[in-house]
Amino acid sequence: MSEPTNRSPESKCCAVEVDQLTRKFGDFTAVDAISLKVEYGEIFGFLGANGAGKTTAIRMLCGLLLPTSGGGKVAGFDVANQPEMIKKSIGYMSQKFSLYPDLTGLENLEFYGAAYGLSPERIKARIGQLTERLDLSGFLKELSGSLPIGWRQRLALAASLLHQPKILFLDEPTGGVDPVFRRRFWSILYELADEGVAIFVTTHYMDEAEYCGRVSIMHRGRIIEQGKPFELIKASGFDNLEEMFVSLIMEREAVRA
Amino acid sequence: MAFLTIDNLSKSYGETKALIDFSLEVEPAEIYALVGPDGAGKTTMIRILCGLLGPDKGATTIGGFDVGRSFDQIKPLLGYMPQQFSLYPDLSVEENLTFYAGLYGLTGQAYRDKRDYLYEFSNLAPFAKRRASALSGGMKQKLALSCALIHDPKILILDEPTTGVDPLSRRQFWEILLQLKSQGVAVLVSTPYMDEVARCDRACFIFGGRKLSEGKPEELAAQFEGSIYYFNSQPTAPLISDLNGIAGLSASRFGAGMHLYLKPGDQIDRYYDAIRAAGADTGEISPIKPGLEDRFIQLMEASR
Image 1 (tube, chains in turn blue, purple):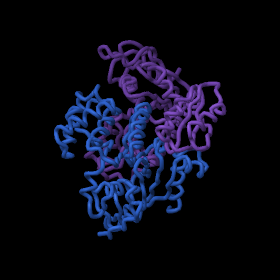
Image 2 (tube, rainbow over the protein chains, first blue to last red):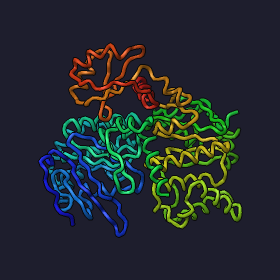
Image 3 (cartoon, rainbow over the protein chains, first blue to last red):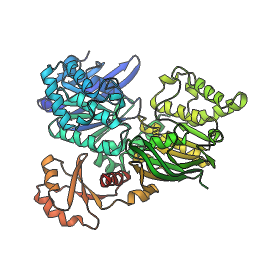
Image 4 (cartoon, rainbow over the protein chains, first blue to last red):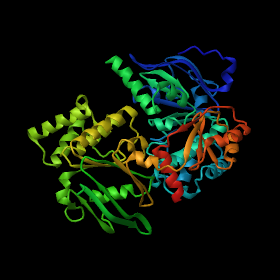
């Protein structure tokens, strides 16, 4: 178990602040001493190839997995000692598992509202607000499994926002979504960020990563690059983040080989 | 004659018109992309081409054979990889390959040669004994592609093959497609990802069952009307709203900055004073080459 980190004066401003966060599984170090700071209102892209350690890192940040060493705070709660409080304070949406296909959109939202422990009145009010905001009214009565993927994703986003989290974790939120839907989805994310929500996004699509305010690139458990997309691209000399990312990872792999 | 031809194809589901007088051709050794939003008609077209669905009207041919009438002749020519992972999760990598080879009557040494060749492509040999369900997303897609290639098809039809696959695996997947192309295979692929479209020889934007535009990727991107600039300044909501209030200019947040859009023939310099008056810091404004996605969205907005 890790030492609780010292609360620095600016730690209140940060949605996520972790230092030397590490997770081992036996001899394998999945996350190797990463340090991160994400502010409220910021959209932070978390990039890396499969097996880079992103999922393990996110599970720790969401309070689903305890660190082996290192630590820090998410939403003001300690990742090592207060995972239950973290779980209640964040919203989480994954492309892969989010909605029950055999329930309607409305039923899914009611289910998630209850799972978050909201009162029936509150659930009703929040569903009303989110329906208007995310333009869900046209498909709340349909079975979620029969909806086009873009709508399903907006519904899943609504489910993750029911309890008004100040931090939102989005795990590959727009996989398979067409560009028009994707742009609309991002304009919603920008609105949320303007209201002070910190948004933590993983994506495999580097053109999408360019929508983030800041990104980090993870490789073999470590963060090897971090910064504003525009500035990273400029400094690298490549045309876009995709070229930069692939060459960076290949270079590292070549060094190992 | 093109290897795949679609001539005035139409298909409705009740009142919904999925395809309207759609025509396209794919040549041998050509990679052709279908790009469109959900419900544009891409999957309907692919199902018709694979003999899974009959059209209301129009003709389609593959290798000179009519898809409606001579599908038995087409089967050996066609490899198809559906959107959903469709292999047997409880079979190993090798068992899946053996199974598909068996369906096409490929056995013995001929099968083993083909298997080894596909392993060379896919780098899946070390995972031959692993169950398909335990593969990563990228490896699953490579296995599905290997199964679709087991009978040496002359045309490959792929429905969003790389959804959920990481960037390195996606790149490897596309390298395999380029190798196939160099061997003369025609490829028709639907994808929502513009970086993949950029790797194709030709592409068409499809919406509402119609073809909106067709050409080489660079030609499609160059059809963007107007110009785009990146404004490297803090993208606050009030600033964006003020910028959008300037007649002739349109602004949207993009990452840590903003995109500014101008109409064709307009010049950015004439807006500098107004932008400064909006209270923006003097962040740099630099031109951006409009991409496929910009043009795609412009077309979508125009056709709504």
